[in-house]
Length: 177
Image 1: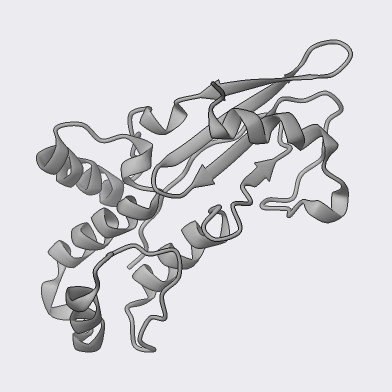
Image 2 (image 1 turned 45 degrees about the horizontal axis):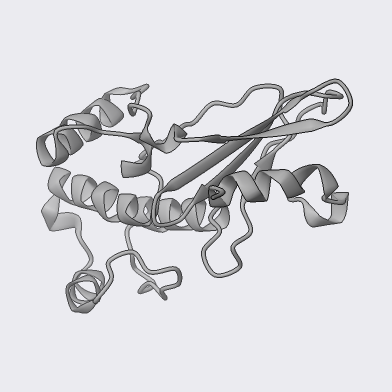
């Protein structure tokens, strides 16, 4: 049995430049570790390390790592998630279900700021975090940004993960108001 991200990691060294998307510019380093990130229903992660002649794919349960806030707003999100689930992992922030949790937290900060059309669409939705959804134009910028950011690096409908060729990477989740 093979973890889905582990299987995808095996293909990464064979991708062409045209098949990759740059997430953050940097200087590629030969034989640097590679990360495979796939926010979807959860937060799938895998990585590759150089084995001397080729890359070795390794599966990971990194999405279950503790969410580490880096600013006061994120500390509030952490407290919100711990109150709701007793544990806050990164996949509670950056995944399909995590979008709903982040939305609920932002909404709890200022319920009056919610766009009524968006609230009605959200209330009527069978799935609060589908792979594609047309948001009303007046959606608060924070939610639009979070939706685009996670969707742009998710596997969603194409099942294509975001791949980072950085020497090291850092997970960040930020909420701007």
